[in-house]
Amino acid sequence: MIGPIEQSLLKQHAEVGPLWAVLLDPDSLPPLELAATAREVQEAGADLLLVGGSSASPGVFEAGMSAIRKQSTLPVLLFPGSYHQVVAGAHGILFTSLLSGRNPQYLAEEQVKGAPRVVAHGIEPIPTAYLLIESGAPTTVQIVSGTQPLPCEDFDRVLHHVWAARMMGMRWAYLEAGSGANRPVPVEMLSYIVSKGGVNVIVGGGLRTPEAIRDRSECHPAMIVTGNVLESRIDPVLLREFAQAVHGK
Ligand code: 1GP
Image 1: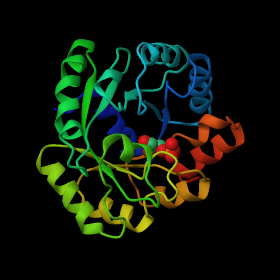
Image 2: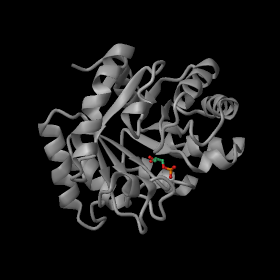
Image 3: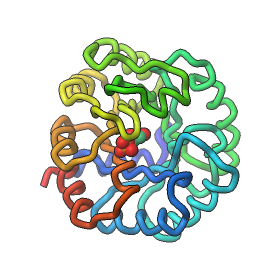
């Protein structure tokens, strides 16, 4: 069943086109800086926040989530790298399975451990296939998960993963080049998957310029994610350019 957060994201997507999600990693920024970034990106025009990372220090995610929620009224979705990151305070969670890989830990084991935490904290799960796409060099998520990405020239292999996900009931697919990727997901692949996949497509990884974002926005995904580039500097002008690039202005 589609919950209220997913419904409102889909409604907003239908009305305004691709949504801009900013990924915040509580392991990379202290709570005060996370809160400041959350406030700035909301003012600039971000549509939602994702909170997640590849490591999980005890207590860090709770403190980060609390700081973010105090400074932002945007919807906040967990995008956890492990079940330890499933903490209270989020509106929803991208409940992912790393379908591009064949590591049982990230296909199912983390999910089995995370599910009771999702229930206990009353977080809305959004079932999402997580697909790593080859992007020029090994990324942290590949190394941590011990999985290989899907080749970036084999569009049908990616499409078949998306179809399998859809047939298993997943309504979303995240095409991930990896944080800080050399090459983002190719525009041609994104366009192919959006048109044929039959799911809501999220794209992220290595999107550092308004041009790269605009090119992908024109493929009409449901959501475009930026992360890394905003951790090193909060530049209000760049933020506005990102917002305009996503929203086609
Ligand atoms: C990573 O797709 C996100 O999961 C964001 O990537 O940090 O490269 O923007 P970047």
